[in-house]
Image (cartoon, rainbow, N blue to C red; front, side):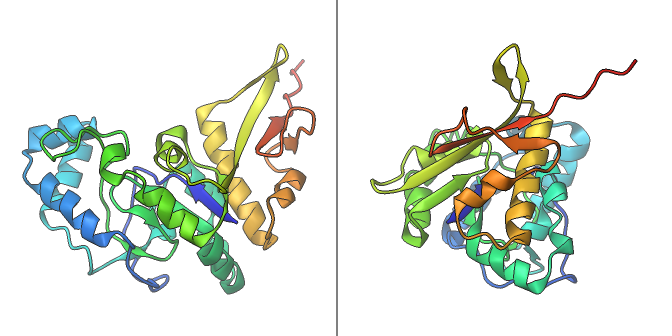
Length: 253
């Protein structure tokens, strides 16, 4: 069983907490992307990144001095988004870190597929970024079936805890025989299950934490997930789509 999750835009450098355990599998292809990005002007990169000047300046400076094999941070400690805060990897035991190493994979527009302790450097490149002038129209085209093939070599069962932007880079190319279990975290509104972006990110991170704390080896273990007010909905779920419903807050008097 492999758990796939999205990266986060905000990243940090932490070379002290833990040593990296290896380099990303697709580092040669990452170098191609890095070289391509370095040919772009500040204004071109700001448009590509779709961000304000403060964020663009930070990432432009990072890009000019980017080293892909030095001063690296373990991937699971490098990302600072909501999902990672709720995963809280800094609090895991060594046994739990080993579980993460076996089961967790992070999808990335820049690195492709990352193991939790692959060494990474801060970057900004979302999977939906357009690659005009690079020889490919999109990162989906750039990566093609390679990410799905890499995951299929490791396991025949994926638990999809990534956003659609990232999961489609894998699920659109999976070979026959692969099973993917997707998850919905939502609230019931007039008989429909509605998802909210921030709450979904929180729940996905909490789910990774839950499975890691229990050292779970099968997806069925997710059905006992009861954190952040969620519970498994047997009647709304299928063998390959797990639905978790968040209890509605009681109205205040």
